[in-house]
Amino acid sequence: MLNISKKNPITENIEQFSSVRNLTHRPHYKILNRIILGVTIMVLIIFFLPWTQNISGSGAVTTLKPDQRPQTIHSAIAGRIEKWYVKEGDYVKKGDTILFISEIKEEYFDPNLVNNTKSQVDAKKMAVQSYGSKVNTLSTQIAAIENEKDLKLQQAKNKIRQSLLKVKSDSMDLEAVKTQIKIANTQFNRSVTLNKEGLKPLTDVEEKRLKLQEVEAKIITQENKLLASRNELINAKVEVNRISAEYAEKASKAKSDQYTALSSQYDTEAQVNKLQNQYVNYQIRNGLYYIKAPQNGYVNRALQSGIGETIKEGTQIVSIMPAKYDIAVETFVSPTDLPLVHKGEKVRVWFDGWPTIVFSGWPNMSYGTFGGKIVAVENFISANGKFRVLIAPDENEAPWPKQISIGSGAQTLALLDNVPVWFELWRTLNGFPPNYYQPQNKDTAEKK
Image (cartoon, rainbow, N blue to C red; front, side, top):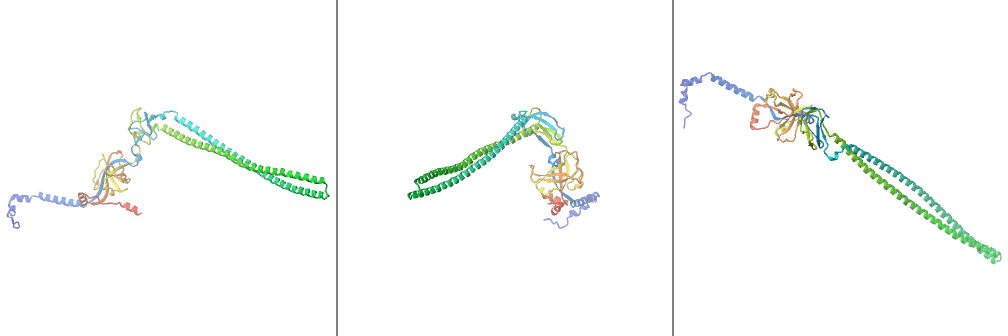
């Protein structure tokens, strides 16, 4: 084994060479050592400088409100292109005509379709009025039948009372006749007795016998009159039932006709409503032949072309960019960074084609970036596997440039917590996410 603890004669005698002495005492080696020492100290100082953690994202320029974004105008009905009123690049106002199309469906070919439908509606309305008049007439007829029924019943009831009184009168007459028979019979017997005793002549007996026979004949007549009166009473009661049944039948028939008229009236009213619906639809359809601009803007692109070309319902006609809009930026962040993004936080934005110098950890030293504020965070992942964040300009900073166009690219930095540089290097090398961060203003709002 080597005895490394002992002095090595080679290292001891190396300084005796002049070349070694020259290399050792050269002045630029001292300068190099100082530079290395200064750089080392500077790196150590940089390691302890503050570094702003951030979340980077990429997206595009868009508008803040949905109604300010580029839109396509569709055809609500099928038709054939007849005339163009605009060309690409034209400025149109709300309500300006863009395109005129003609009808291609055979059920709408009639040029007088709207007027004919209006005539049908008017005719059906008159039919409804006729049915209403018929219903009113039948109501009047039913009321007249009821009044006549009441009068007839009152007349029949009066006849019943008359018959009843007549029955009572004939009954009393019959009792009187029976009393007369008893009296006549008593007188006849008394006359016979007195004749046998010689107190009355035979002529008086014959006279009493004749009177008795007359009274007996009279009782039969009176019984017949009483029976006739009772029959009249029964007939009067039967007449009341007959009148009730007769007028009930008449009233039922009139009510049946009334219900039939009401049913026809309601059915006609339903037809009127249906025709009115068709009439309004035809009027609206006539207005759809002219495709108009929904708002002020510029015609970006004509998606259909030519004259006489047939288009279907819902076909895209032209693309329009609204004239007035509030600019915004939509950016996308990864799912791991989503919990660190909050509504109302400040974001730095720079645009493609705009001169920019960016220091992500020191945003104050960056040039060409603009201030933004998060206004919406989408909670559903997009097709690219990231979450969409909408950013609006910050009113407290410089306005965004007017030269940028909708759809141009944009980069964003969401500023988080301040940490030392060495901590950020350590986090990046280990692949850890940024520090979990909650804005203080949100906590204050929740406490309030």
